Length: 304
Ligand SMILES: [Zn+2]
Ligand SMILES: [Zn+2]
Image (cartoon, rainbow, N blue to C red):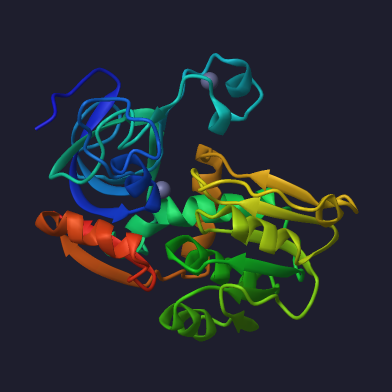
C-alpha cells in the first residue's frame, strides 16, 4: 500500500493496460532508474484518498506522470519534452498493483461511456497512437500507412476511418491482418509488403529500424513517417534518395495532457472499443510475454 504524499491521489487499481514500453523497461532496453519498479502506465483507478478529487471518482493515469512545469519545454507548451519528467511505471511505481499513487494534476478525467477494461488501453496505446497521427500531420481523407498492428495501431485505425482516410496496414501475423481487415483497413499486407499507392503519412509501431525505412520508402514527396516507439533496435543506413523530396522522419516522444483530453473525448464520441485480452495480476508475466510474442490481437489488460 503506497503512502499518500502531498499533491497525490491514492488509487485502487481497477485495470491496467500492458504496453511494449513495459517490456523495454523490464528487459533493460531502457536504462533502469531504480533497483526495482512496479511497471504499468495505463491505469484506470478509483480515488481512495487525496486532494481535490472526491473519493470514488474514476480517473486515468498515463505514461506522463508529472513534469516540472518550469523548464523551457513546459513553457513552450511542449510538456511531452519536459527536461525533468516523471514517467509512470518507470521513474515511479505504476499500475501492476492493487493500489497506486499518482500526481493529482496528472490524472485524466474519464468519460463515463467506457468501462474499465475498454478504457485502460486507451491511456497509452490510444493516446500516443493519436499523438503519432498528429506528429505525422494526418489530414482528413489522406492515405495513411500503419506499419505493425498491435494495441496502438488498432486504436488509431478507427480514428483514421472517422477522418475518412484510406488506411494501409503492413504487419506480420495472420490474426493481426484479419483484425485490421475487420476494423476496416482499405488494404492489408504482410510485414514486408509495400502498399500499392504512395502514402501521404505513415506511422511505424514495431521496434525495428528496418520498418521505419520500409515506411519511408512508401511515402510520396513531402510525406511524413512518425515513429511510435520509445526504443528501436537500430537505425539502418539508407539511401538519401528515400529522404529526398522533403520527406520527413519524426519520432513521437511521450504525450501531453492535451493529447489525452482530445483523444479520450474523440474516442468516446466515436465509440472506440479496444479488443482486449484480460490477465490477472498473478499472470502479469504471461501478459508481458504475450505482448513480446505478438500473441495478442488488440491490447492486454491486467485486472488485479
Ligand atoms: Zn518541464
Ligand atoms: Zn505505453
